[in-house]
Amino acid sequence: MLIVLATSPRVAPGLLTSAAWQALRSAAVVLAPAGHPQLLALDEAGIAYRVVSAVGDAVHAAVQAAAQASGQDGTAVWLAPPDDAPVVPPGARLLHGSADLPGAHLIDLVATMDRLRRECPWDARQTHQSLAPHLVEEPYEALDALESGDQEAFREELGDVLLQVAFHARIAAERDDGYDIDDVADGIVAKLVRRHPHVFADVPISGADEVTRNWDDIKKQEKRERAERAGTAAASADPPSALDGVPFAQPALALAAQLQRRAERAGIPGDLARLDGDPGDNDGDPGNIDGDPGDIGRDLFRLVARARAAGCDPETELRAAARRYRDLVRDWERS
Image 1 (cartoon, rainbow, N blue to C red):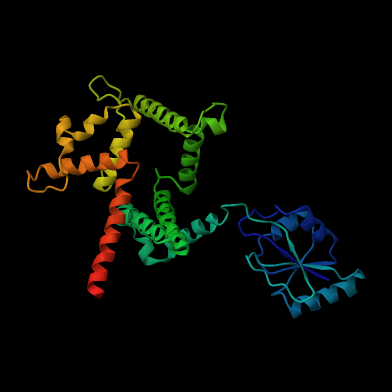
Image 2 (image 1 turned 30 degrees about the vertical axis):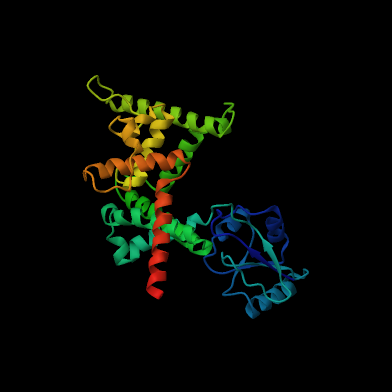
């Protein structure tokens, strides 16, 4: 009998199931292709093996020869090349000796990125700066796919977003003072654990709103500690603000919404969203464009506040309106 032993290329050699080790130790012959990553583990375990070219007729012939020579029952184990789809000849039994944990395929991305960086002329010459536009473009393409309802397209675009993380981390790893993809993962894991004490510690909560408040409080504490370590908490420096860390490079409507959300959570008066402090002006017609052009930005900011008060995301609503307008234009063109 032939047992095809499948192993994952993402699991360290030697980390096999007890059933796999039992099959290896009890087999009449163990067969493997040259260079198989498990061979060193077999050497350390004292398990003899024979190197053959490929599974198939050659393996079956080797099994028969080994059985005749050993006088045993002819059971052989073929260490299939690490692959997601091992070849199993008719009559053979497939045995999985190791299995991937969730997220293990990210190892493939790291290995692929390493090879591209070494062997592809285009990938090799990229820098953080040359890739910067993609940090903006790829998330928007993912959002567009999500809004289309096409989950397959969304999955593909998420891969493009993930590529940006892997690419930048690979570039950084080449610098003497840089970091690698594991440092990036360690950083976000540490942050998530730190900001979820109700999950990873014994902090009780009453609901999602308290999670948000705790998150903000922990984030403020982190900023204070970071400033103290950097020596930036001098008397002349600006005091910490609820708006610290808001990226001003994001689209204007998203920026306005994030500023307002941060201010609201910090208890800052909502009247400030009117910008001029005149409650009466908020009753005007935002569609009136005959006034001072300088009022347009203020009116847009007020509309953001109105959208948020109605429980809407202004960026999403504007994108939805843009899609409706696109459809109207296309209908008109077709007619």
